Image (cartoon, rainbow, N blue to C red; front, side, top):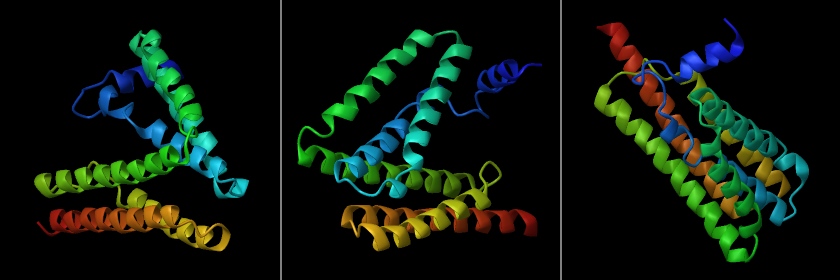
Length: 184
């Protein structure tokens, strides 16, 4: 089985176990793009945002692969046009980039609350990894420190403090339900 066939099998597998394409393509690449553009707009040091171009490219390539193996690459065009357009539109006015950055924080927080809500309803943490969420928490804590040492941008600090709290909350919830399962 080739790598392409394995990817296609995982994308086209049982829909209960695979994240639906409509959910995957929603806002993740755009959030990275906004964060990257925000950092470039304010001319922050390259090392403070070096991974974001890679994350944007990775998500766009993944999106193209999903559309390719679903047999409809042409459907990816609107998403690519949206990303390219957003790159230029975001910096037309300062308030646009600032608003977009704050909306990204809100959207990221909402997705974490949705994850928490799912965990509370299902009381099953088998589909998520406490290690992954713990690493996300660690990353946010490291980002808080690097932001304080480099730019002290309040918008970015608020974003990472919120994400640190929510990532830690999700990790703790996962661990709580894992211990509930083990004790039963």
